[in-house]
Length: 383
Image 1: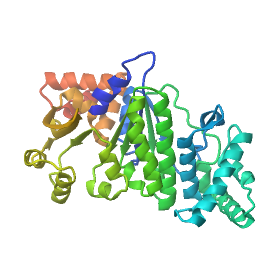
Image 2: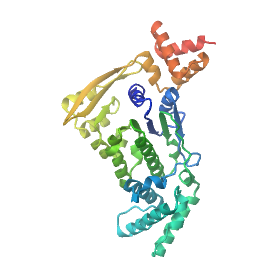
Image 3: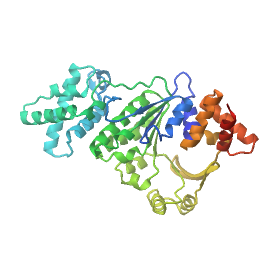
Image 4: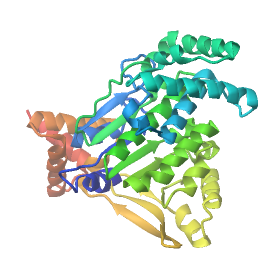
């Protein structure tokens, strides 16, 4: 509902320079509720996996990382974190820093000679008087590059958003990879969303359960920078979780909370332990706790929520009941069978999906039917 009725109209305010909505999700095409938004309003779905069918090159062009003789420290830090993961440089001791120094110098040398580098280009620039460390770095890089999993990040980027308002990165395909590789792919995707969102003013980035995969503190620091600087680029960043216990364990959770101005709490009726932790971690007052514990969601009718937002120096809260009209429900439902019916209705009547939702809503109101019952009846009676 927020995406359809708030975020999407917001990015469309300036027709000459429309914004974008970037979503990082883990559902897969079959189960993605966000894919519906792209089908309704226009968008592209980008499945990320280790097959190399989609390539995201983590190395930006030289024009972005080196401008007027000055290095972009944020992009260099990003590449350093990526290469730390690839080479498994984990610590902050002197030995690890010596390896980082060799890699850092190689990255700069590569950019001085290569305008559009890729990962495999870096090997030729690993050079230092410490031959033993250089040889080890080269062996580790070559080992990763020779692994088929590297195809997804070793090459020219194949992603093209065009002018689509919705860009959905889906990471369901990385679930079988190691924790290190999951973090690597997630981190690169988040950086890609950040870079592109900051280039387009008035945009949104949504992370659905993405924070849980970022456990490395160095990666967390760079993601924290995203949350802290987004407002400078008029970008809204939203973190979404249905599993607070898992979210709380992530290294990013406390940093996200510190950099958040608005929090929306939904129904936790069947998870008493999560309710207790949420109340404690967010310091809910007795009145807020009472509201939070009593929140309800009634399918097809309404959802109750507790909104907390920073207004000046004060943190204010309000209980909100979000009523769903038949049209709202048709737009917002993520039920696969219901959406299949809506798509069938659109196809049979020669409508686009938004028009099909509107037609179903009108029919439901005229005949006093629940909207999906109205859709089913319309489908049955349409040749």
